[in-house]
Image (cartoon, rainbow over all chains, first blue to last red; front, side):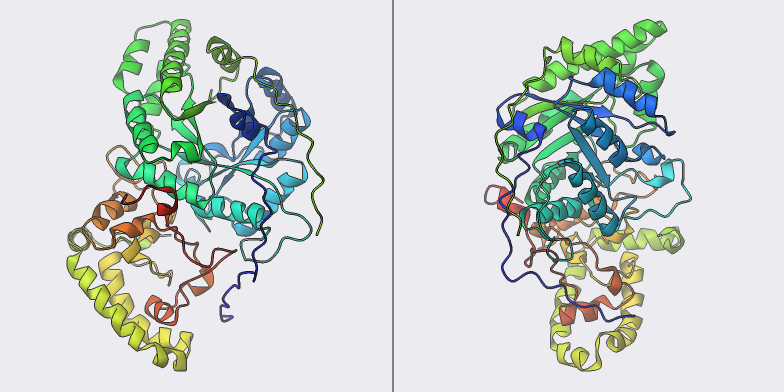
Amino acid sequence: MNAPTMPVAPEAPIETGLRGETSNLAKVINAGHFGVCVEVSPPVGPNVEAIQREIKTLKGYGDAYNVTDNQSAMVHVSSLAVSIMLKQAGMEPVIQFTARDRNRLGLQGDLLGGAVFGINTVLCLSGDHPIWGDHPQCKPVYDIDSLNIIRMVRMMRNNQVFENGKKIPKIAPDFYIGAVENPFAPPYEFRPLRLAKKITAGAQFFQTQLIFNVDRFREFMARVVDLGLAEQCAIFAGVGPTRSLKVAEYMKNEVAGMDVPDWVLKRMEGLSKEDQQKAGLDICLEIARQVSEIDGVKGLHVMAVNWPAAVPQIVKELGLYPRPVIETAVVAEPVVS
Amino acid sequence: MTDSQEGSDTKMGLRSFIQDHPTPLVWSWEASAFMLRLLRPVFAKLGMETSSKIVKIPEELIKETLFNCQDCAQCVLHYTGMTCPMNCPKQLRNGPCGGVRLNGHCEVKPEMDCVWVKGVERSKKTPYQHEILRLNPPVDWRLKGQASWVTYSLGRDKIPTGVDVEVRYADEVLPKGVK
C-alpha cells in the first residue's frame, strides 16, 4: 500500500465570486417570486419519445425540472442525458447526484459534464439504498455522503478546486446548490440542525419529502425559521398527487421516510377509480395551499410520480401559471486564467 | 458491508446497553486520548503501518466488541454520540438519511435502530453534544484497516480536503447557544 499523503490545500484559496446566479431557479427566487420545481422521471428504456412527451407535457409549468438519478435505486436513463435534453428544449434542469452510484471521480466528472452543457442547478442527496431497488445484489458506493457532495460542489464553484484540493484548470463551474430534507423521519429535533449543517456545507436551496402530515411540517418550519435558517436558503415544500388508494397505501406502508396520515386513505376509500384520482388531486391542492402559507416556504416542489399529466392542472389551479420570465442580465465573459 | 459482522442478540443487547450509558466510555476515551498523544513520538518512530499492526490487536478487540467498529481508521465516535456511523448501511457520517422509519429503525435493515437516531440521543449524555454539528469530512479510504488510535495520535485522521483546512461547524449559520 502506498503511504497516504496529506492533501495540501492551495496556499491562497481562489475566490471566484460565483453563486449559481445564472440558474433560472436562483433568478426566480432572488427576484422574490414563489418558485415551482417539477419532477421529471427519466424512462426505464432508451425511449426518446417518452422523454419528448414528458417535455411537451411539463414545459412552462416550472422554473426548474428535477431529473432523478436512478430513482428508487432502479435503472433509468441517466440524469445527465435527460438533463441535456431538457436544456436543449429550453427548460432548466435540476440534475440530481446521489452518493449511491458514483464516487468522487464519477461525481465530479458528471458535474463538469453537465457544466459543459450549461447545466448549473444541482441537487445532492444520499440516494435510496439498492437493497430495495432492482439490483439488490450490487455494491453501493457511498464514497462520500450527501453533505460532502454539497461541500465538494461548493468548493468547485467558490474556490475552483477539485475535492483533492487541486485547482480546476481554466475556469470554475457555476452551480446553484440544492439539497434535500425529510421533516417526517426521526430524529425530528435533529432535522433542522441537519439543514443547518447542509447550509454550512454550501446548500442554497432545499426540497422536502412529499408532505401529507402538514402539522409535522409546520413544526419543522417553525424551528427552521426560529433558528434563522429560512432566510439563508430557499425551501421548496414537496407536494404531489396520489393517483389511487393503492398508491397511497403503498406509500404509507412500504416507502420508508413517508408519513401518510390515515385521513388521506379515508378520503379515498370506497370511491371509484376516477373519483380516487380526483380525491388525490384535491388532497394535493389542499396541502399545497396550506404549506404555501407557512412562514419560510419559498416555493413548491411538485412530484407527480407516474402521473406527469397532473402537473399542469396543479400548477394552474394554484394560480402559479404562467411562470415568471426573468430577463437574463448581461453577464460579463468569465475571466480565463 | 456490515452483514457478516453482526453479533448475537446478547452481544448486541450488551453493546447497546453500554452505549446508552456513555459516561464510562467518555472517561475511557479521554484517558486513551491523553495516552495516545504521549505515545506520538513512539508511533512516529515506528511508522504508521508498523504501529498499526501492534495497536490494532487491542483496538480491534475493544472497539469491535463495544461499537461494532468497521475499521475506517478515522474514528469519529466522540463526535457522533459514541455510536459508530460506519454501521449505517449508507455509511453516512453527517446525520441520518431521509429513509429512517417512523419507529426510528433503519430503512435498509428494519430490525436495526437507525445509527443516527441513537447517536443524536446518546450525544446528549456526553460532554461532546456540540460535536453533532461538526461537518465530518469524507473518509480517506486508503487508511481503512489501519489502527485509528495510531492515525489519531499522528494526526493522520485529520484530512484537509479542498480548501477547508479546518473542520467547520454548523454554528456558523445558527444563532449563538444552539445545541
